[in-house]
Amino acid sequence: DVGLIMETKHFVKNPRPRDMAWYDSKDNCVHLMWSSLNISIHSLCGIVRHELGHAVDEQLHTTKGAERRADRLAEIATGHPILYTPDGIQNSTYGVPYRPDWLHQ
Image (cartoon, rainbow, N blue to C red; front, side):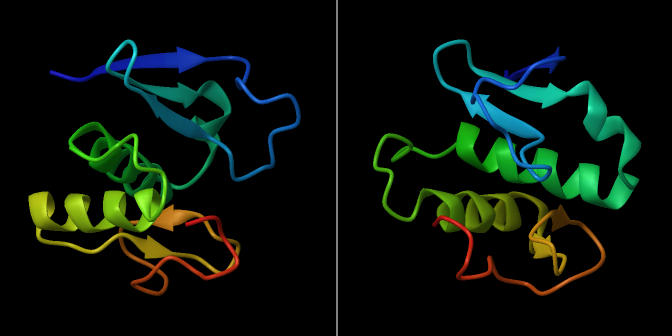
């Protein structure tokens, strides 16, 4: 089981607008910013699926490739790829089916 915790403040000092969620293995929870509830349901779904990909990643602490690995694991679990909008936000119905190279991998 993976928990969900709604957050008012991000753990990084200067989060970017696309920093809406993260997975923390210490508490086995996806942390989701309350502000993310203002985005489209399709982006919210893509973000949560991506974070759940981190939750099942047996190599989670191997940071190289962790982001694309999370996307791949989410696709294996759901049968649908994580898509990325032009601004780099995950989405379930719109965007390109690969993590853009300009995002950390």
